[in-house]
Length: 165
View 1: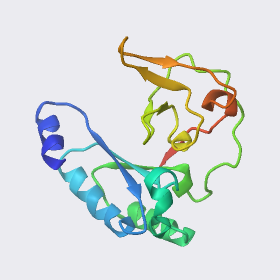
View 2: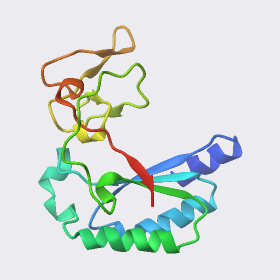
View 3: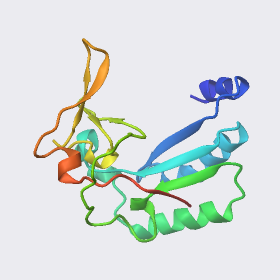
View 4: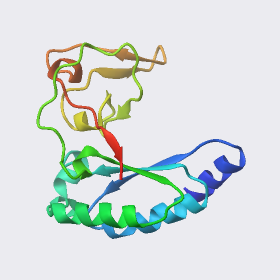
């Protein structure tokens, strides 16, 4: 991974990285941010581990003590990093919102995330649920929207909101 990021830097391609924070790697976040900043990576996104897919079978990876996130935020703020570190709202001081109002429907989608089962979602909070509204249609080589009564647009699965740490 570091070689690919270095090559991208040499080619002038802006890069970023994403890390899912677990009980086993939370102490490595600051070190990784330093390494990535030193090789020119512009941004590190931190995700909270959600108990879906394979992680549902490994509850020991979940961080159950919110003080661990507070400590991580403090260490990141105190460090003089050459990289922007942003965290999803679940890692924030206030946690994720409990509800999300239904969206009117996007006219443009910023990103689509791959579900471990191959479905496509607009929010990683929909990963592992049967709320996927998007599918890759192989014969036409297109991503298509297949509305359903439980898709993430109708069901109002909240998107992940990021903030600087």
